[in-house]
Length: 107
Image (cartoon, rainbow, N blue to C red; front, side):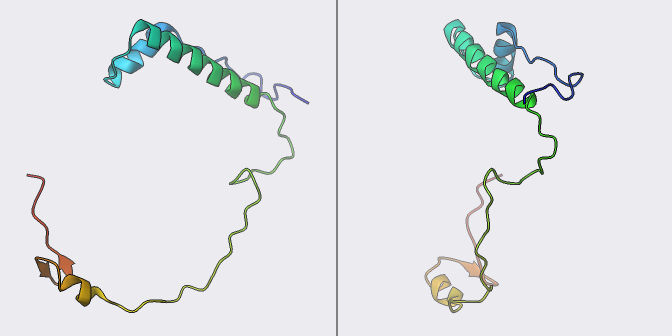
């Protein structure tokens, strides 16, 4: 059932503590040595799961966009409310051409 269908494409993913510390540095995240070891352990576990999934033979299985067969109940696109923009904008401090005018926040 499980076979490396494309063994040439399967490369074990491995990280070192230095890799974790480098990524933390690049992300500007301060991590203690204990935290870095904990993250390394968790990432190694995640990579192990990915390797397990890559070994599963999926020959003959059609790709899906969702894990479960999903059928959305569609409805006709119709207007269900009246346009109340003018009522709402009547209470706004400043409006121009149907748009709310707000103070500039980025210089």
